[in-house]
Length: 575
Image (cartoon, rainbow, N blue to C red; front, top):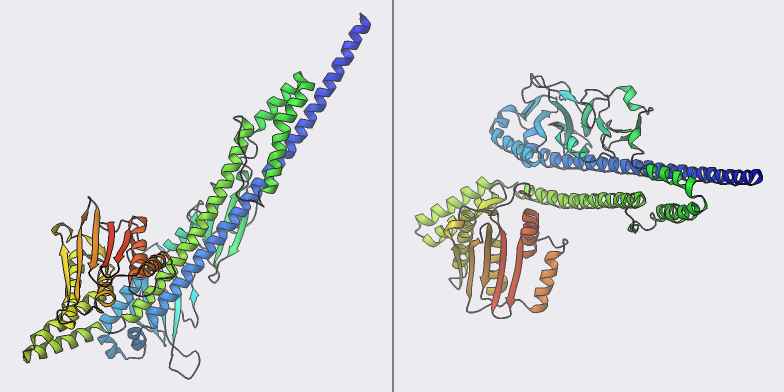
């Protein structure tokens, strides 16, 4: 009996020793997995933070290029460029025109709080907005610069709102001497754009992001305390925060991120309770538990480890989640984390695409600015003079055509891209009047507008280019002439239906198919025809805009446009 008891005790010790070994092995496996998960979590957060900082830097650089383009258009416009070379009496004559240039510039960028213009002796000769009073203008604004620069943060005397200055020197383009400066434009800027660049770029929930100038003054902050100056100790990595910094593409400015260390490893130890329970159960099950742990714990962990190593080669791969326990939660969490990273990458791609569209829009703004350099008052006065002479000589048709042409010019240079339907129809009728006289009544242009849509808003030049296409591509070649009809009516409760149709020569099937493909291609944005209108509709109304072309050879062409009754809030309203 004693021997048997001793044997049972020996087996118990062996089982106990085996249980201890199993526990140690499982603890070692748990420790390794936890370290790997924590390391992967830290690497992902640091990579995401670096990616976000790069995106912020790109947005600041895009904003710098935008301000350079706006400043170039403003400073070298004919009115402003002439203003530098005039004396004080001559400048009085151009005061209203200079104010118009300033107003147009401020409309291009909401964050321009004021504009100050200095001559070559650094005397202020024109200004608008904040800082316009010379006595109250900070000395930082009056500092001479011979190249483009950005100032540090400063405050105006009557406000605690922070600003920074963008210096833009103006040079003599006609001088034989290189770099002869004739003046300087200073743009007083608000911080809104910098704050927008930080929005949504935190790598973790409590990551702190700062944009500071060359003197460590805080220009924009997200997730951190609102302070005037970033103290030196906040720029160093500590036991609580991991600090990274990046030079911005604006002289002296710096981007600083501070990530709490306790958030670098969150989510890496969610399976600790499950493993602890498995260790306690292993002590009771012994050998049976070895097989259980191998199939239910070790293999899934190995699969996750292998998947984590291979997922970099195939970013689109995801784990198959077939369990409802903690392992399945970890797998699901890993899949969600990978989905989040992929979504971030897609957002970055969409942001780049949007930046590309904005760049195209900026180019169109430049072209529009160059077109508007012609003084419209000269055209109006000349056309009025021609009309007066025609009336004096009793040439009423010439007077009518001249009056219609004058109204066309006034509508074309009128500010803004959104007009009432009634205004757009009046513009079409003026154009129709000219066309009917030009073709001696052989081509008729008709308009049909419902009364309940006249006060609605549409984008400018929505239908006139389509009518022009119909006249010159569909009807001009017909000996007997024809007609073009433009109609606007309500489609449902909140939609406008615009139709332009003609009885011209129509479009061949292959050419029509090519035209439809060209409209979808973003490379086809030149000209004033259907492709241009289609792209403008997409920019203004997005996917809510419907555009369709129907045509039959020798029977005519019909263009159908269905849009919301007005551009919704947040959509593009100026292109």
